[in-house]
Length: 161
Image 1: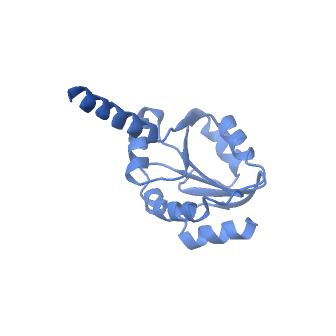
Image 2: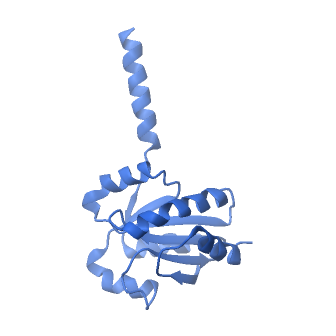
Image 3: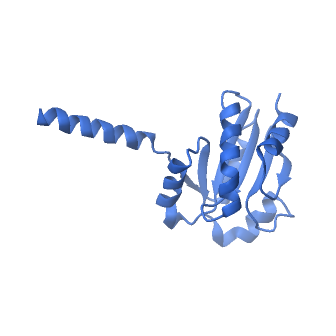
């Protein structure tokens, strides 16, 4: 009986670890490559952080929209955390607590922020949350304030076929 209990616990722990979302740490070039790799898709790229109150407020709307479009092969949502890598466990905990159902990556390139901020958009002043919409690998929209579900849907529907 003890062996069965031990095996059951191991199985449960393995399953819960398998469900823990992996968060990839990327440099700017890797992030750009990832974004442009989604060729035939409308891609929502949202920059956020666990310490950003407006970011946290808009996450439920983003997750609702992601759930709505998740089965559409022409849609992709990518959340880019600007948290420091040393708080990666906090980011993973946040993802689990907030039921984040989109892919999350952590942009680990703070030292070169003055290079990659204007590369994304020359008018980006470093505020977050910021959302970019890409269509077929090309940036088509830049929204530098929190978004509502309806604003996000409008952007997506404009380009989604």
